[in-house]
Length: 263
Image 1 (cartoon, rainbow, N blue to C red):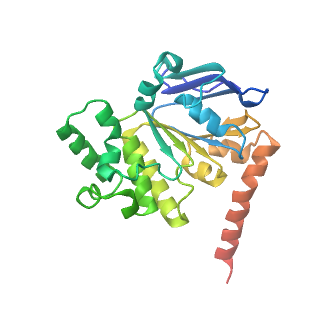
Image 2: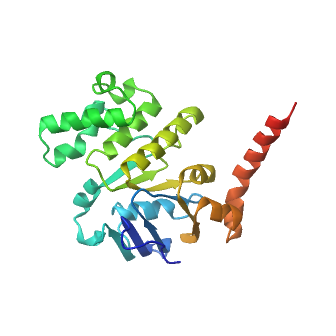
Image 3: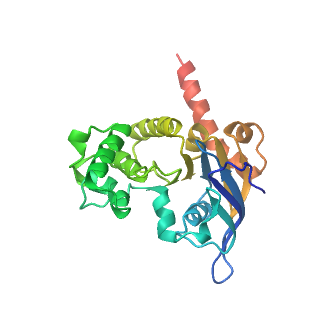
């Protein structure tokens, strides 16, 4: 399956393959593209290859074959540490440094890049406001002093610290309670539309992908079985596995609709 896209793509992956000793193939000729302002979700069960694909993009996992181009550059020609400073990363459970305040966590990459203190301080406050946290209230708080949703907002601010053109999210919302999760999802999509960064989101939750993503890539056994818009997948599933993944959110939607119609 070739990647859809054009020459203006922020990210283009062609034929990505990851083989491990013993013959295990975690990702098998995976291709995708992501344009500025676009959110692509990678969906699949555990072991489908979705996280391997995500981590290969910023070389947390080194690919065995294929090409990954970030802003027109082959990622293998970029120092791995430099590459990761150009790409935002948000993981499940926020990944904040527990001994750093919110401002110190957000400032990690700017400090590594040698920004001066006034510039860092201004950027920290700007980002806290972007993720709807009052800088005066939150900049000096430690992770254990804020809620799970607030920690994830700080993690998103940290990922956006140096205005990366691409954000990678690994189950970034899955550990949150449903109300907090829904609010943060809405805010994230609004923030992405405002800033126009590209994003790749790994999730096991098809409902989340349908509601948030511009396009969805469904993976099974290391391969991409279908890539398309949410409407494409719902109306034209190309594989029985896609139909299976769609069944649960469809049942839930019907159940809620039935309750709404009940006396």
